[in-house]
Length: 406
Image 1 (tube, helix red, strand yellow):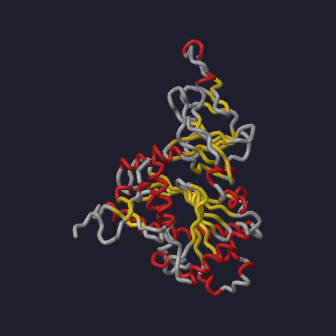
Image 2: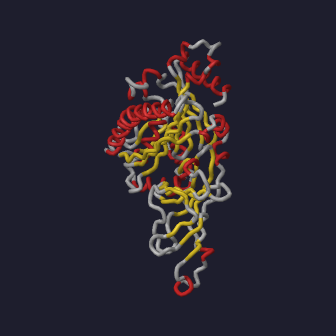
Image 3: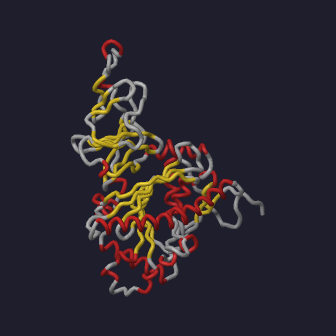
């Protein structure tokens, strides 16, 4: 982050803390409970939104040289990512065009000049072109190899991430344009140079948006994390900046910001800040002093709206450690902290949220005026799905919910 940006954030947050205030929406909003429970709604989010937007599929470093490949599953779609001779990355269906056999097993990686189908030996070049069909002339004429290559998905790289759209035939995309002014901030972090040191996938019993709501909520640390991070964070105090319809920044602060000498904070303003970045539709970056947690949250491939897959990647910064031993100890310490704070505390509450909304005892949940980031996510989803009023409803005067008689 640029020093002037850090200093501006410190000053804004310090003023909010001293004023006992925060960032507010103009209105209260309602999110229908069935947005978290309804299978038809979940299918629309998957096919009409998530699979039509650029999403994070891998780190560029996982495809380090020409011919390096990685078999990934993105939003339930199996893909083969391959580094090309010109340095770009192609995303292709991990399935032979003959009978659909998978070319590389899930999670498989390596370096290959070609990819051979294990079923009948059809062979494909690194760029997906069909190169060989056994018994072509006596059994498969008039099939033309030049038009039967692997199905392609739009792909691009930015900030060390490989982004893909999980619907073939969609238009190319520009990550820099999607990020708006946030692109320069991620560049200032030199995010492309950060090292992927851990990647775990969690299968959890809650809707993907329940997980996302939690990471976007500055209102909960005092109550969910009373003995871990809660004592260090100014609860319910944050600044929120949207840079485009798909990119924003949510920043909280350490409690020490209130007593900081305003004439001296510019010497190291970052030590007071907890920045989170929103890369919609489903990736969130949590910045720590020497690492990023990268959360990419997906609906469950089973179609169950009450389950999700959560990718947690840990990235460590360049030139921040005196030795590999120090680095490795730092990673292990912070992974243990994530398992305590994220997996046990945050997701523990999220699991209970899902059980609560599953009861359908009421029709709507509430977005408070102090929950701008939650509103940003859900209004984006509603706008993309054409839900009218951005998928949310104004609460009105707040005297009674619509599902109760008075």
